[in-house]
Length: 88
Image 1 (tube, rainbow, N blue to C red):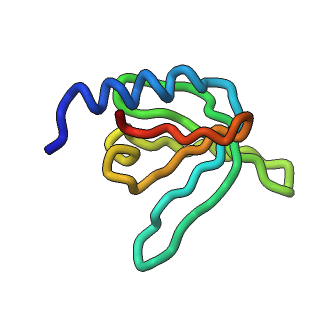
Image 2: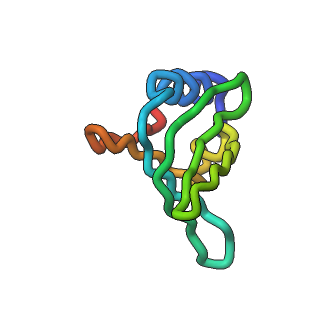
């Protein structure tokens, strides 16, 4: 069962990594996954934003909710020390 303390712990863990390079692995459905490296740009009360840059000098910002991390639809790995943000 999802509890409020789990989501608040995930939010706190993600807030400590704002501005750092992260590797994001997202489940897109039908056995497709999206793996990219970007910068954790900002956090909000119910979502967080990751900025991706590609080879063509364009920037893309994608937002995910904290429940995506809780349900393991999204995994975040901080590239600096390869630690995973996990539910405590």
